[in-house]
Length: 161
Image (cartoon, rainbow, N blue to C red):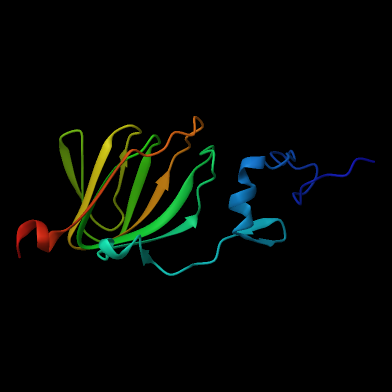
């Protein structure tokens, strides 16, 4: 008899067991195991550093070192903006507030329930004149490239108000 490495019920369609990919080991180390389901518990939203106080974030599902899979974060902007360029697609889903997203010379305004995708390799500019809270999903990056541009600004400093 062969032992399965899965807690999925045997013999049901779509339940072919597979070995977990080694790249997920770091990510799974941050999760708790609950009957074969990886569970990530919420952590506090925090600034990246002292200079980014209007932007708070936390990983929900952290990225893996080789970028072979998606990752999910929660973040917020309070009278602040953020720009970045990633080697993967980035989808932002607005939970609260109003988020402005600019990429490729086009700007959209997102409200709760709206989502926007900035394609890999493009620079995305995100800002909230007042407040916005979002979920971000980063697509896979199997080549393992790194992001090469980041910028943060406070709306008050940028506008002088």
